[in-house]
Length: 122
Image 1 (cartoon, rainbow, N blue to C red):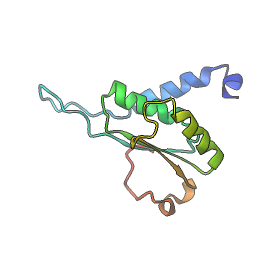
Image 2 (image 1 turned 90 degrees about the horizontal axis):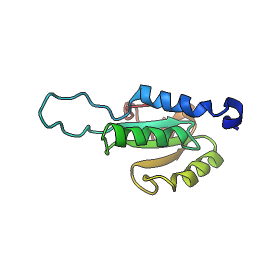
Image 3 (image 1 turned 90 degrees about the vertical axis):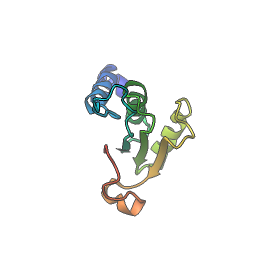
Image 4 (image 1 turned 180 degrees about the horizontal axis):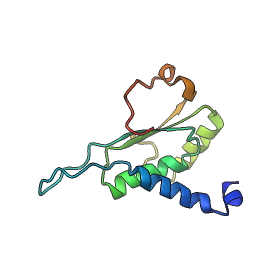
């Protein structure tokens, strides 16, 4: 439906959004051999299908060389999360600790187990 309504432009918007967030980026420490960034903890709220989360992980791991970056896709709709889980099977992060799914209401993430100040990118 997004392809039809936006004539495919929504894909460009998503890519621009991810580039502007620049997940996994760590400023150079000035050493001759920089160490890999420590990794971001990302929480993608209402991210059911995973479109943005997969782009965020790709950017962090491929562009910023941050293999420790992780992402949790959260949604209140179990059907959307199932779709994201299904789509994740075609990604490098399927069934890995890098990607997780959380059925939760964004208005009360604490009761879903998301601690305060535990996320770098929301």
